[in-house]
Length: 85
Image 1 (tube, rainbow, N blue to C red):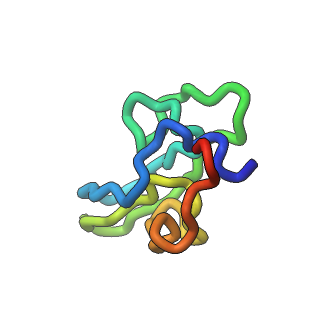
Image 2: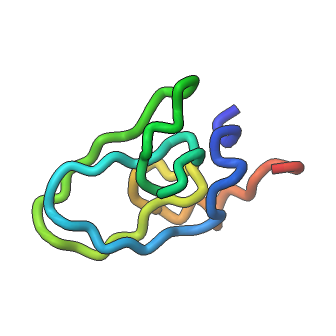
Image 3: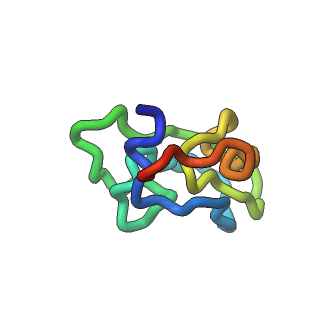
């Protein structure tokens, strides 16, 4: 299921200051440094690589349902988690 990897993740956006460079967004929510990947995903698809060209404050997705990963698109407000999630 689309939400299964994010059972332990935040339910809303996570504000982070991003420095220029390559970053890796955690798609399994197992990272101790969530929303950034720390390699704790052996059975998942792995992280989403993204590039930042200049320093920026950004809201990263904390629910795993954004169509604009790694960035929050408000999906947490528009699509409630299924029962039991």
